[in-house]
Length: 282
Image (cartoon, rainbow, N blue to C red; front, top):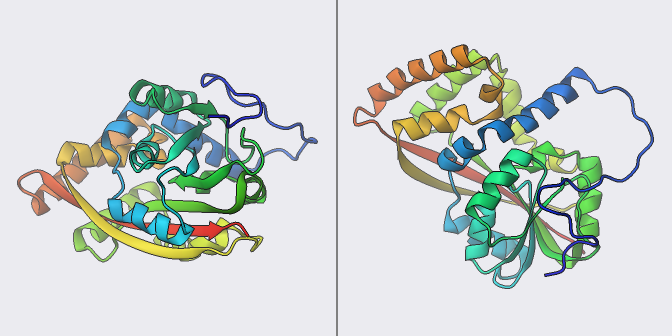
């Protein structure tokens, strides 16, 4: 399929557009970039332990986008190791994956050689104008700058096409999950109340410009996994990847003890609420 103006080799990032000099990055921007890059050193761990997505999520994407995934020209951005790309492909979508990180892209190519992959980011998509029926971001939109990624989405989508963003989020009403989240927040020095406010403002933060009219849906699902998989999943998140190894290891071992009190058979039932946002291009 023809998806790029100049097809970009999968092992090379797309050339970003030239821009005027900008102010030096803030501490927050430096940390954000470090967290985004941290996954490249843990791509295999990410691929092996991160949760997938339920069929009901893709049913909801089709409903809100107003079309079937089968045959849809789909660009999956921030594709990572390909968890969402593989599921979209299995639903019949014609998928082009876009991933900025070398380590994640290498893991993607290793496991999904049949799905095209180019290097690039949502802030400067290496895709032609009006190319896509569907533009997807699974766990990835928050790594973009909406001042750039919103115009890029509108450029790449054909008229009537749709932008779909989703995140697996922990189900806060499940008691053991709430207690585990509080322990992690204390360890990481996170303001839990502030994080809950951010989650509640997800739509506004997805497009501060207000150019996109998002419909919202939540899909609950769960999986049962060995405790080692659960702990490796926790350890694959950027905040933990940037934590010194000795501290991270100590926390995860303490967490194992807490979890065995709840799941003495060492099989953890993780419950997720997938937050889905879909906006159609006029």
